[in-house]
Amino acid sequence: MKYALYAILVMFLASCAPKPAVPPGKSVPPGKAYMEERFKSKDAVERVPIGGTGTTFYYDKRLWSVKSDEGSRIEFNARRFSNAQIFSYDEAVPMTDIFKKLVEGYGLKEAQLLESEFIRVNGEVVVYNKIEGKYGRKHIVILSYGYSDKGRTVITHGYIYKSMLRAETEAEIVDFLNGFVAGK
Figure (cartoon, one colour):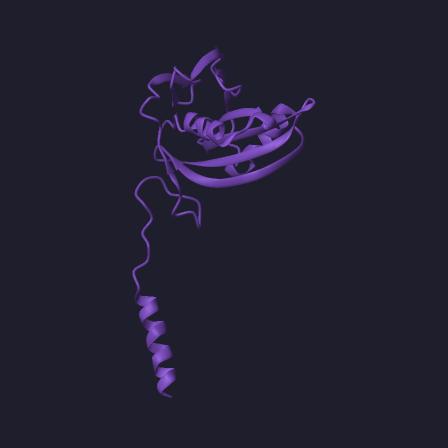
């Protein structure tokens, strides 16, 4: 009987424990209250607006340069053999399906979604995806942030040949992606 009372007391105290609060800001998907926070680099000061979405992208011009800007498609070049693009669509794609737009857009064969998670970038919830697949005859890796809201979708991504991907290169691409600032 004594142990039963202890068990009830422990269960009661556990149920009274404070529940973690959802951080301030935009609501997050169910079960995603605690997400990794990422912020743009202090060196990312060059700014490019993404079409008519109200979304802005900041980048470090010492590492990246705008190759072309067509509004709904912005292409970047970088040192270290990586490239990056930003696509915007006038449709709200579910954030869990954003990687499919990249697979389809590049016509990747043997595509695999290696990682996918919700994170906060500059205060906004985005989905981070890491995709590997065959583009033409070469294997590439795509790192992307996807954002969807109010009838629009923005996908910021960097890609590199799989054979060229190193930890420092991946970190540079992620640092580049952290320049994403969603319009409110």
